[in-house]
Length: 288
Image (tube, rainbow, N blue to C red; front, side):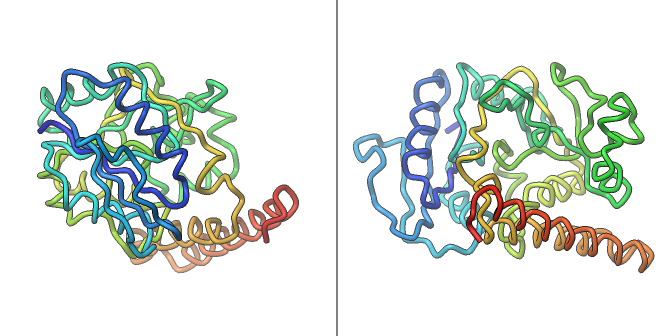
């Protein structure tokens, strides 16, 4: 089998079905399966019961996105595993192009694709550098926007790299990560100490540590319906997990090599951003 597509469903039944529909209607000429890892609060076995390509893993405890992905990947049969968000719309021929690229480039350990928001704007999360302390500072200060062509100031968003060309990058988005199954096994899978957010960057870093490339692939694209799931729901629990993920990633890779004052500033910045995000959620969504 060419491809195993792992989709985590947490209370997004209709979105997940829409994502599955989009995959099935746009994908031909490769052999694939779809594995739905369902950790919803009220899981129901109701996806494509008569379609043998769709496999369900229901009744999972909600131990985070990475945990559900790891459980789904453990059931995968494909040469490649695709971790795909439940709020995405695949476009014609994209998955075939991605499989072909990985077949022809054996040094690629992870592939992400051009991702657009519903209004047609580019989702920069699909093409990123690592959030080092300096890259994070430039991003928070908006220097990447002031100097979009600067490699120095655009180290996180990689704004100096054209979105219409394929590049080797540091990280791609967990909304679409296609990985050779053998490489994923070598990494040990997603770090389950990160409940959600940051687990994709962590996995990309470990893939690169194994000597493989992480690729932003511009010849295929999808629509990411941000705002219907995840951080953009303005849910206080999701906001907490987002900032915890950033903190875990920083402590794991940078805390021991950075001066104490840098760590103090990074933690303070994360806490301040967390507080601001909660206020915004209260004002905009009233969900505190």
